[in-house]
Image 1 (cartoon, helix red, strand yellow):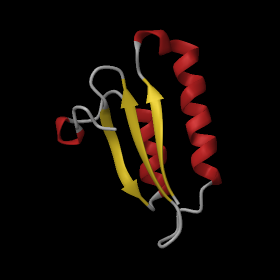
Image 2: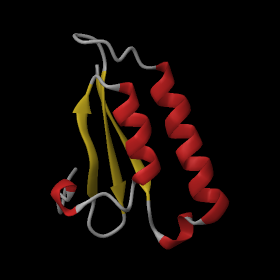
Image 3: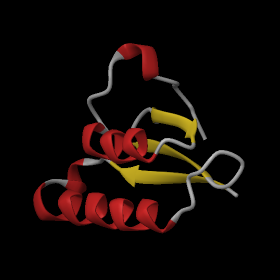
Image 4: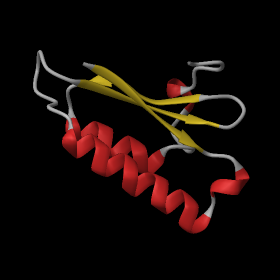
Length: 83
């Protein structure tokens, strides 16, 4: 199964709201079977524009790390209009 975690990065999602969204994303990612040939996950932060923080991967560490940096990944990860 391929799944994309979309995290709202708008100004309404600061402080505890954003922390709660990130905890929920982490909990969800831990439920996935991220071994090769099984589930893959990607992370997208959205505001304006969308930001592809992590392309689809089997790597749990990369998914966990990307949900922490959503909103501040480098320009090589930006995909305006990503869906």
